[in-house]
Image (cartoon, rainbow over all chains, first blue to last red; front, top):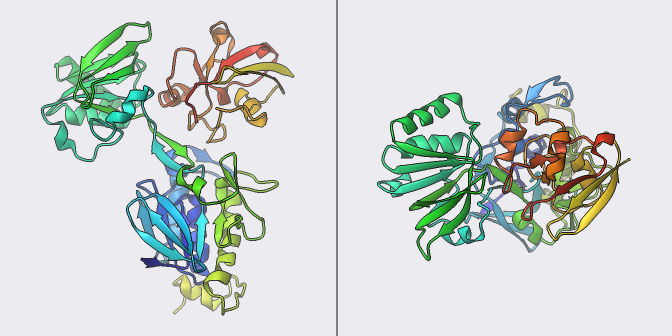
Length: 338
Length: 106
């Protein structure tokens, strides 16, 4: 059981700055995120897109913003738990017991949900029967590539993940690469490589096709793919891989007894606390009259929620408001003063 | 005001007066039309506002900008008449536009 003063769910910009605020006022915190990297939507959806409305930062990309926030956390020791989703939040004697998808447990008086629009999950194939093959012969990510050796693998998608795996697996498997249009959006060098492999007969490319059916009773045996013009092809295949990017799903948050409306959580504007004492929601996932889904609003909400956490984490101490320009306490924590 | 018709997965028809200058996505979100989540808020970064445009309207719509087709790769069951509704700005020319919302979106 990990004990901490506050647990932050979500390592996007709002979660990161809130970690900064918590550490600055002397609280311990840990961060959990379902993505395998820090940065949330900024890093997953728009790493290269410029943002123009961060105060005092005229222009920066999602990736630059994330890197700057990580840099700002440097003075502090903060534990990140990535590729883990918070599945359960339960009350136990004034503390919250939080369980993750990897079986870690936390005990904390404060849970801060900075979850954006929920957790990122892979987008799945449309045909219903695909579900029964999932994690057996159908995957949305590759964990162990050795299982494909000598087998036929059909890969769907047009981005870097699909192309990279097509190149890699073509070395020791029979690979079909299937995409809904002629253009691939992956890196040009990889697109060229894939086309070269096709020419030399190392892999097959089917464009303007989409999956229409997965056949087989227990084991996947073949797939039907349908052309834009209606023609259907049957391909024998042992494995199916789908790389359609990620979609945000509210997920288990819906089961924690919070007031949720249209995928957002209602909070007050003093502490950004939900209807459950000690659970806060900040950033895109919270709602209150006048809420703006801007990164700067998330920063403000996190700063206030952090102060509210202090009361529950240090019930016998009084919180004193201080400035980083003058407070020797804060400067010590920031490593700027002995 | 321009009339836009949204057909939801349950085959219900919602005809809404949408203010010119808003997008077809915003018209749906402001009127609680189910199936258009617009998670990214119109940034062409999520494909959760994907719609099928009635064939006769395809040529009358503004052309796809860079990036829209890439994002449609990730949409649920994209077809030839797929568009991201956040990229369709409502104007008098779009009066009477009909869009279908994919069954499993969101």
